[in-house]
Length: 128
Ligand code: 5GP
Image (cartoon, rainbow, N blue to C red; front, side):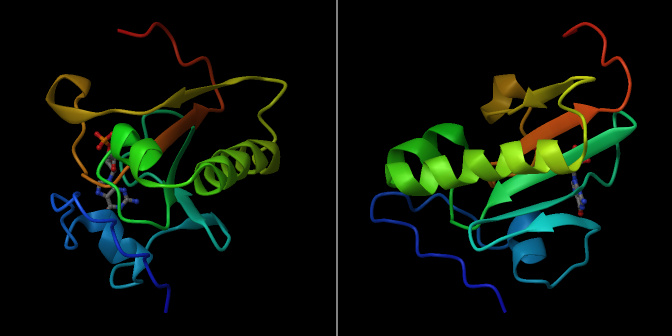
């Protein structure tokens, strides 16, 4: 069982029942790409490119700002090191990739647990 660290005081908006919290607790399945002590990476259920991997830190955080403001530098660095390791593992460093992080209403975020999208495997095209 993976333990999700407690959210520091002041951030009471985190919904423990969001779909990625359930994936972290292994309550619902995912197609795992990589897991370590600090992060989990899995295929997006509705891929927008040949390779579409989601990466989430194993802490309670709603979005990017919540993640970087609520946790220590080491936790933040370890997550982004894992993102780079997964990019290596996917063998997409040379061909290229797009790293996306949606936040809030205008950013089009659907799942309120901070995550990055790694899109690759073909030309991803213009931003919009
Ligand atoms: P957002 O819009 O929040 O940045 O992205 C959420 C992503 O999560 C979407 O690309 C969506 O397809 C994906 N997603 C939603 N529910 C599930 C699920 O149950 N399993 C997986 N693997 N991906 C999901």
